[in-house]
Length: 305
Image (tube, rainbow, N blue to C red; front, side, top):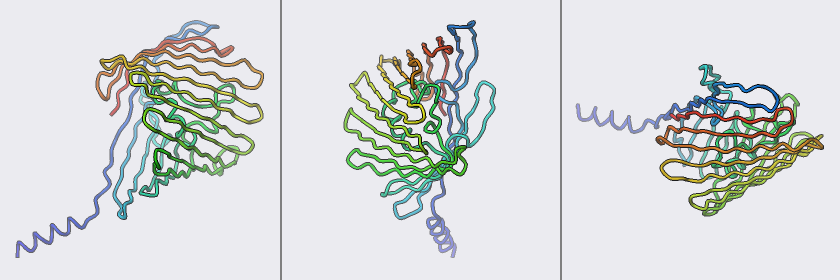
């Protein structure tokens, strides 16, 4: 009788679907920054999340059968110099994936920004390599996570991946839907991606490429915003492996809006990986941006968990 009860218990346990495994993860990024504006006095501050945005997140997946997996991401920004946290103001989405690709819904990156940034700015220093529209028109229509978004990502077909997304305009300030598409192709050391965003009478087109030459990897992108005032942007990134966990990072970006003077930003940084999770970084930036022109140097530590 006992053997039958044990066998029944084992069979029952095996019949229960696997529970979703939830992972807690995050990044803590703090640095000391010395800012030297062309107009004004030098200041020294402690800054949070300037290399990589400090964050706290939860994610999980479970096998739902028929070759499909369901999962979620819930992530919030952490202001790690004072400890304040807003859960869900970054990624907040649920998804279903399988042989057909992936469908994701919630607050998530637009197809263009995710598709092109992953290719063109692989090796720059986090937030200093973002591929967004600069200038007076900051390009918030296209940058970062967007609420009320549904996005489809295709499976890789011979190295080609397509993303198509729509952000519904019911909670946008302009009330307009944001439509986004990107396509990326990777083959060996080379990768290229193109993207397009459209919202009302405003749209943005961009193309980025990357080449891995071994010790040195380089990336580039160009973009154009067609709006009431056009904006043209260009960015170059390079990362050189110096050995011993050290790397050199170089970046150069320009933004030109209408008849305004061209904005030029140059970044030069050095990083040292102490482990797979902890990195020391130092960076110098020179910003030629009219009344906001100046430079700064900062040094800090990033810990991923």
